[in-house]
Length: 140
Image (cartoon, rainbow, N blue to C red):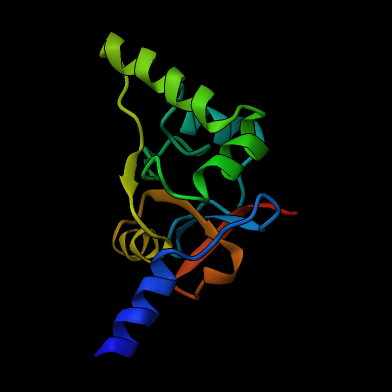
């Protein structure tokens, strides 16, 4: 039992460096094959919450304390995590848009994307399985 707890703890606290490859993923049955950086920024910043084909998207993110969140937004938008948090605080106050649904771990995001055909999220590239499709990659 102690070993199981240790293994689960290690997976949950998986360290992510700023140079780790990050895969943006969707359900394997989603018809989208790729997405541009601009489209991805618009989706993650709440400006446009649909895939390029017009299908509405359910955007998944990590909780504010997760170590992958900062490197993802910095690589994608050029903004650090504090700037992203401030942006969402202003936007939420307006009541026009809600931030992406947040999760605590890559395995939770993978599980939810497998269950949700129109979901999009990001995980460390080495977490990608055959149950999802990579549509954008941030390389180190």
